[in-house]
Length: 259
Image (cartoon, rainbow, N blue to C red; front, side):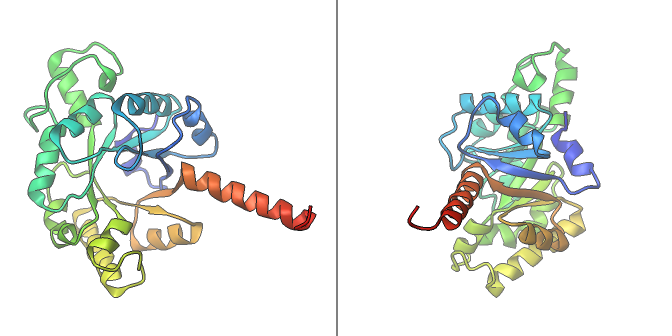
């Protein structure tokens, strides 16, 4: 099975997809069969509960895929539950300051690295028995933290955020970032481009991997040239709509509009 941390270390660009709607038991095998290496599972903008997310993570891990789980908020109880149900990488939304990032890391890590409440032999341990010290060390090594930079405040503080031990990766929330900058959806605006440039420069200095959600191969290539090291290609809803829409349009075109 590919782990989150192994994903960050590999030389080849890791390519995955977003999951926010389809919780079918076969989803892990379906995605693995076409070459996905990781999955961005979203609780913030979906109806997924922690119980549903636990089932999804188990299916994905069983298929050999690495996982990142975006929790509904930066609240400690959301972060801790995500870690307990087995998320390899936990994505916290709207990280705007270094102190917020520190608080997230403290919630995700066992002592001495943090303040997470201890639970042993559950999903994050793959239900295996370990001594308490070994289980705590294993959990701290396994559980990664991803800071979602998607506000003007986050851009302002991105250098300090990425300097913190325990920040394993950064994710750029491009849509929310454009809204925060006052230019909703205008990704060619100099304000947005300058913000991304600053994030990427800080990431390069800190040697911190950066991830993005992309909508096309061309966008993926551009983001990779900019320095992105995690690429999430579209998501379950949009991929189905794209494939089905193109197929229906092609059939109608070949048969004629009156058929």
